Amino acid sequence: MGRRYYRLRRLRRYGTRQLTGRQVAVAVAGGAVIALAAHHGSAHTTGSVASAAAMSAAGGGGSLSCSGLEALWESAGGSDGTAFMAAEIATAESGGRQYATDNDGNGTVDRGYWQVNSIHGALSTYDPAGNARAAVELSGDGTNWSPWVTYQTGAYQGQC
Image (cartoon, rainbow, N blue to C red):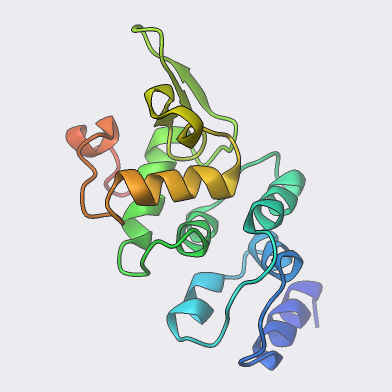
């Protein structure tokens, strides 16, 4: 059996035990959908979500797939019901790149997966967990995407 299968099998074996940040990072990097486990209530994350996301990004140059963005959204407190849309927005905004930057014409800067604008102070960060928490907060847990241009234009549709 391949390493990926072994990792998935190992994650299933944990059942109701809590997963560490490193285990989440390995699963995200390996393409496992941790969001599915969290959705079914069988996994809880502990440790530093920021370090888990940073470790997962290290192997892929800071890029996350749609499933990785969904998992990051949920680990930051976002609901599983809005995770797919959040991943589509992030993919449209940043291409799933952690260090995506857009210098706006008005002197502000959009940063990270969800391109959080610098007018929001410390919420505008490249830190994966911080950027996801900011998106959860600013979007009202995915109930108001109007500040995101890709939502306004519909460019997010079909990204995931």
